[in-house]
Image 1 (cartoon, rainbow, N blue to C red):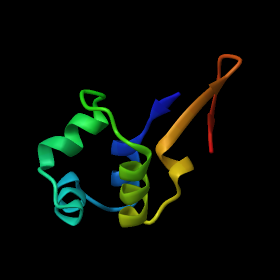
Image 2: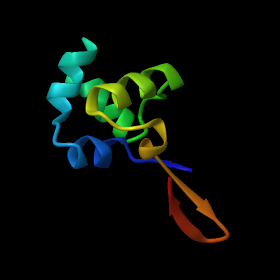
Image 3: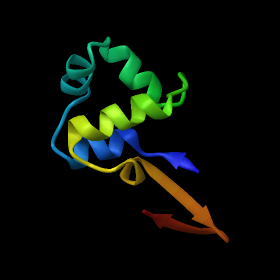
Length: 71
């Protein structure tokens, strides 16, 4: 399973800076979530999804039998 937070932020017309400001966090933290250098909680992922107007499923890419599936 791969997180696609960065892609989802861009696809929904937002910047990392806008998301960081809405969360009250440093922009570097958003970058760390995107690049897997910081673990993200389910609650934080839900907050990001709410801010950018998507579902939690839109933040995740799953692989089944060597085939990528977007939820």
